[in-house]
Amino acid sequence: MVKKKNGYLRLAIMLILLVTAIGSMYVLNERYQVIGKNQPKSDFEKGPYSKAFMPTAHQGTIIEHPYFAISYVEEHEQSEWVFYELDIQRLKGKVDRNFNFRSDPAIQTGSAYHYDYRGSGYDRGHLVPAADMAASPTAVMTTFMMSNISPQARMFNRGIWRELEEQVRDWTRKSQHLFIATGPVLDDNLNEVIGQKSQVTVPKMFYKVLLDYTTPEKKAIGFLLPNEKSDEPISNFATTVDEVELVTGIDFFPNLPDSEEKRLESKYKMALWPINDFWTNLRIKEWNSY
Image (cartoon, rainbow, N blue to C red):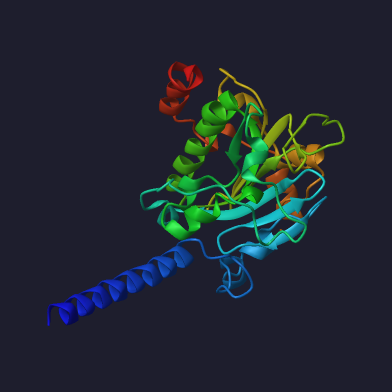
């Protein structure tokens, strides 16, 4: 009788372990599911504006992920732009950064690998910030794909680039909604590369382009920043969208009505994009000293 009980006990334990293992595999599969053609239609397919405002591909191949689109350039192993919308709802939530950087399965030729940056002296710099996807853990996870990463100098990534990201979130809270395109400036004068398996080009500059298409005051602005530490104010790097297009070769809002495109892209007013000095002071006094 004791032997039978022991046998039943062992069988029960084995069943429990089997169920636990299957459950763990299911959870992992849900957490790290591949973003691909079997996934639900993306925001860009659902909304009437996103595709209309999407930039053109200059050197890259456009790929739409569920929360943002990219134009990936195989030659440089990074995206020439990422494009997404940001509103107050998307900023609500707590960002869990406990995700691993990983290759983008949607890149047919293969994206860069996380270890290509190891020992290079450069940060894996986000183009779409994880904090801009705070409303969804799945969305945050997608920002850790290597197609959303570019080599950034440590004090640039953790300093002025970080401040610009914070300023953009402040502007979003004020205007309710922004269209955002951002990326590295990939030109023919880039000679530095990193990578153990892939050859990842190191950009000398990064840009960010913002469009507020809400009435009554539609507006746009661009930023061009050297990939280096800076103590200068963000406003020193502000420019027109036309200037960013000239430098990058990218047409950012090609489907705007011609008259409106000319008006919005040819000028900017810094007064319409007020700088929060809190972030500037924090960068200069703390972030630039890390």
